[in-house]
Length: 388
Ligand SMILES: Cc1ncc(COP(=O)(O)O)c(C=O)c1O
Image (cartoon, protein in one colour):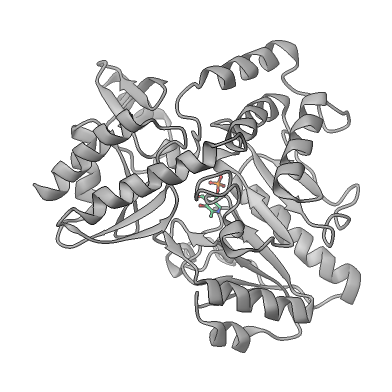
């Protein structure tokens, strides 16, 4: 109670919070101040990819804290070099820019797309088409990019040069393409928009049209990346590698980090003085990222993610309250027949299970390394609530 009072008196009220004071976590279980346990099916919104305080991760991070916690980007650090190499080699990208969050990674992508076009075609080719129901972040540019009217309020004027096209409707996209367009930005699976995966034919058509007109494709993989969908990048489900891909959330296992990945086409756009970040590529975050990527790209890891996703889907299919299940891998949206998703989340919390909503759906984003025992226990709690 003391903690909640402290928050109420001192922290700005920009979040609706559940009355849970989280004290500690280990594996996929956390405890509150009264030592009650909670199984985590939310991963801090897809961020604690290796659960709470994974031992290898914690050791690498602590070692880095004691070795070198920060150096400005005026200098090189071996840990950032190591992580950059691992990221590029495992994703097939040529270069990376490090920042601190998903919104920042998308800002970097937006700036790069506009400069790519400016360098090649001059002024005026700056429009970025994003999709209705997308979510790209909370900064002014990424709010403007976000294709949901509910976010386009209060903070006028928003940034010029963003147009929203309906997802999975190629005719709508075509009707919005003109000579001012420099990029199309999409989430392969819209996360905050309700865990909605794009159709393969739609994604194919987007890439074809963009390829013909030298329009860049930006994949916002802030939520879908780093193994969340059962592939290292969700683009692999579609057989596609975007000109620019953004990552954040699970990339460093719970330490703030974002990354913008560039293909051969976009790797030389940013030059000294055009972009930067004081904390970008921070050694502690890179140390965490090295462990996350080593594990996620390790043998059998993603097979396990897919097996666990399959298990969850099977359990949900048998549940009478479930209308349908959306998403890919361990990014799961559940449409309910009669119950309200927000009520289900509250009940789950009371019964020791942390889950999320996405629009009107229940959303599950369990840590990628959750084990079968934890998964079964959590699913039993969820199914009991749904069938009650
Ligand atoms: C797809 C996507 N892009 C961008 C963001 C913004 O990330 P951050 O909150 O780290 O700025 C989010 C956050 O939910 C997201 O889901």
